[in-house]
Structure formats: structure tokens, C-alpha cells
Amino acid sequence: MAIRLTVNGKQQSYGGDPDMPLLWFLRDELDLIGTKFGCGIASCGACTVHVAGEARRSCSTPMSELDGAKVTTIEGMAKGDRLHPVQQAWIDEDVAQCGYCQTGQIMAVADLLARNPNPSDDEIDQSLNNLCRCGSYARLRKGVHRAAALMKGAKA
Image (cartoon, rainbow, N blue to C red; front, side, top):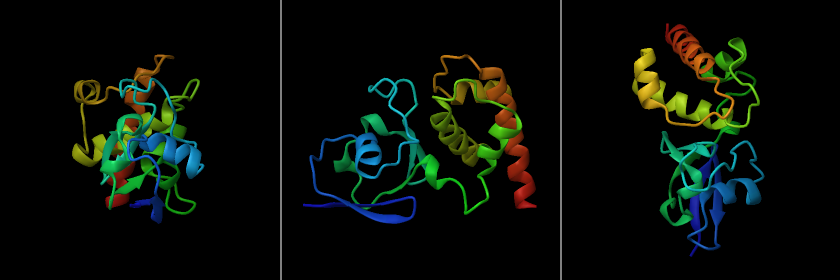
């Protein structure tokens, strides 16, 4: 039986192994390679996407859990030529160093700001558990605050 889901606003169908992780469906079948493989055990966060609007580790999310789901990847964050405020903040604050973890970081931050539009540094540190091997956490915090300000401006 086919699993039907919406990925970045487009209907998709999957008829393969229901235990296959969402990560491999996105990368191998849909060619959405912005979502990265990091650890394979949902620990590092490089594979973070949104499922039903909430951050989720795609490496440990089996396709069988996604029938009818709405999935957003980093490729679906922008609206046309307009970047999502978190993406824009990442550019403005030069957050990324090597960049490998950044798509997962951006997805996690967008989820955080949807739940808490003005987090303190402590709340950022407690809420975000994506790993960055380069250690750019100070710039990441600045990026979160910039994104929060951009989102407030977009709502005004």
C-alpha cells in the first residue's frame, strides 16, 4: 500500500519498505539533498526537517509514520525568492562555518521560534540540541536573535 505525503507543498507517494527512514526518501528518491546524514541515530540533528510543522529527525522517522503527513525540508522554507527569516538571519550573521549542520540548525531554530518568538540565550541553549562540530554556537545564538527580530518585523 502506498504511503502518501506532502513534501514542500507537493504530493508524493512511496510504495517501498515502510521502515525506510524519511531521510533516504528525501535524498535518494526526491533528490532533496539539503537534509544531511549525520549520525543515523537521531542524535546530531543534521537531518532535521519539519513534520506537521514541528522539528523532527528524519534519520529515525520511518516512512510508515508519514501517511498523510506534511513535511517541509530546507528546500521548502523560502517563499519564492524570499528567504525564511531564519535563513536570512543566518546570512546576515554569517552563522555557518563549515555549513554541514546548518540546514538542520535552521529547521530546529524555525521550530523554536514558532513556539517561543523571543527566546533568551539560556532558552536557546536548552531548546536546541543539534550538534555543530565547528562550535559556532555563539554565532548561532546571534542568528536566532536576528531571526526573531526579522520575524517580528514581518508580522508588523
